[in-house]
Image (cartoon, rainbow, N blue to C red; front, side, top):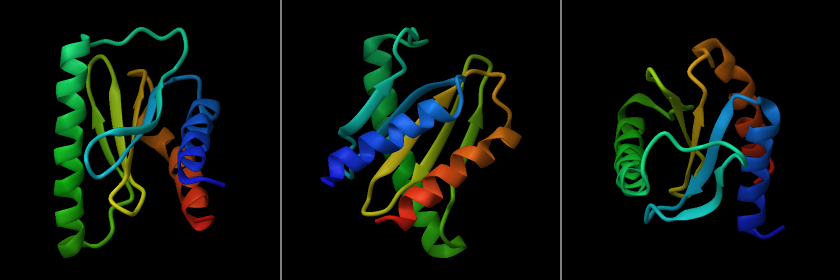
Length: 125
């Protein structure tokens, strides 16, 4: 299966795992979107310009996670809880990362089911 199709499948599994997942996108090392996007019918919180800026910032954050992993060990995910959304960043190897946003009522305790999907996906690489 081509790599882009595998990334698309991963994003689709995020959406299928929980109806509160708003956005699931795989980015490459150049911070370009490889697969995924916003759940159909869900309106973005931010403007198009803000979204583009945030995509770059998530890429920078992914670089920070990679640097920290050299010292602290491999990161499973990073979770940010905001008033309007939550953001979860999963390093998925080969300088790619999965960015997932959820509704604010998605609790940190709920991340486990998404982690299981990502870990299972990684094992099939």
